[in-house]
Image (cartoon, rainbow, N blue to C red; front, side):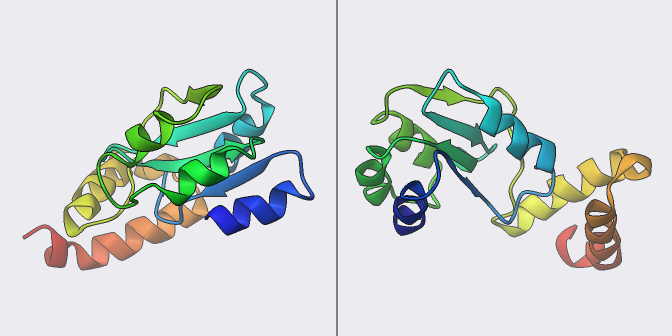
Length: 136
């Protein structure tokens, strides 16, 4: 992650890093993070204590990122304790790290099945067909 941010900050004013396992993070969420001017570092948190989106224009974040232990429930806390001028978005996202996360995502998708976008519908269909494997 550090190398990606460092490289892109050479050419762009802001860099956005997003997780690939966040079914409810939308393009609008990403665009919204780019519009925030009040902070150099914007984090969108996940329910498990991590984060799923980082928007930054701050080169000093590079050293902080290099020392974070990812995959822990303290990743966001550890990262933000060492960064100034930050904003933590007040909406928490569900990521998919362990089998139990599939249950939460499946239930959330099922609750709003009629308003899902195409990608979410595909995920719902996949989870629906495999629910016996993760609902046990």
